[in-house]
Image (cartoon, rainbow over the protein chains, first blue to last red):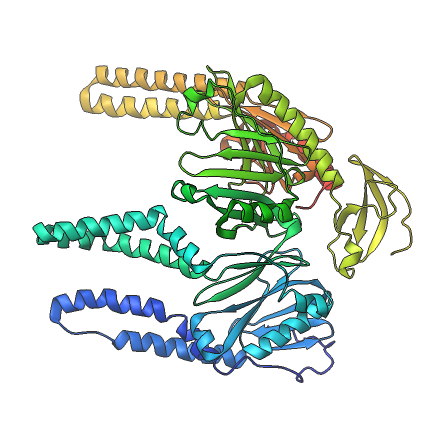
Length: 489
Length: 141
């Protein structure tokens, strides 16, 4: 169903198509998979009858080329009355309108083949959602850059959008250090070790070695692809400060530029793997929430973990952390000595602490991980006491934030302390939550979803915003009442 | 609720095994298997009883506290403002005893505030109250 509404001024004018090379670039995305398929199937067919089969590969390529061409034929986009409209689909029509005022970030992604062909993909994210809401693949590079500016000009002034391209660099990773860091990871060492053992074995027992290689090949290949992904994904990493958040650019074959909005950070983790510790390197990761509003299908909605510094020195990491969370440095204390019995391996790392705005904890056995959690993001506070902890009089306190496994853990604290922590953290989370200035819905061009926001008049804690204006409904400490709204700002 | 489930299942199993063994190996084997199954059922329901006795909740002004567990004791404090939605479920056995389970969902997968075995009227009251409080205190992420 096309929803070309009657309100559209001139229904068939001003439509743009994607770049004519799009079908080729799309088929190109299949190339690695096809090559892998060819290699795997040839191992089999060669062993059987010594021929190389390519018929079905040609068939797959042809089908996807035809599909790609049709997709290109039916996809069109244009900018109409403050919205970007994208229409696509031959059988299942898909038409989406992206209001320019709500566009939060425009990412430009360039896969390898697309780079060769000189085209890029544009991914558009709206405010209030972390996932990609609109996608234009592919546009010519110049067109993509131009359209990006046009889209962002809607609400950020163009100057800021331009400067965000060349903003203040906060951190970068040079190739040498990236190579060294990937080399010093467990996966690489296991792969190299396995290959070395196989090579030695090959000298003495070629048959066994061949058999073992056959068995291990799949694992080695997948491990190699993990290493490769790390290397190519984080190549030429650079983090730049932008008005809306930290802008990241990275990638060897496929370059990705993405934005981590400040307000949406749920937790920051600094990981120091065992092998990196002699060099004082660490990795900084952030958990970023996607959807802001309470949506229908709750649990762990769209929280993604992103490396904001793939490898760097402690100073780099601290510098970034200060920018992200405002240099949180609560005093940390170790759990009581009897916790050593319960956690013999991790005891020397365990410590945790909190101040009025952040909780911080250190955990880990081989890899030391330090997690900072802003208390205003607390979803719940839990105290858990396992059967091993009970006889020792210990308990663990969790501060959960949105996401599947993101939390600060005050592990193995004394019972009295744990109880006190639960009370304190609950109270602090509450006051931190109330303190946080929530974005005013009026600033969003009136497009913000209906809901409770801080009262702009300041007479009450919250006021209800509905369909572009403030209502008379107000709330204080959970109690609702009525107070006429001041004229809309 | 679970206890009723365990008792029903063990009685059924006892009858079934009794019949089978009686037919296959004689009356004595049948009797023994009945005794074993009943004992198993009794043990399970004893543990479930402990587990359910330990389950308690407290509605405070700003948050809901749910404590549970015998072996692993857990206590969750969930602020109403963080609630995404409330889910009330009732399985077939629960419906038989006019009970239901209330579950509070937040954006964090780890925060579990589940209260099983509530009378249906109490579950409905809790659901309405939580929804109302959640709406009036809602905060963004």
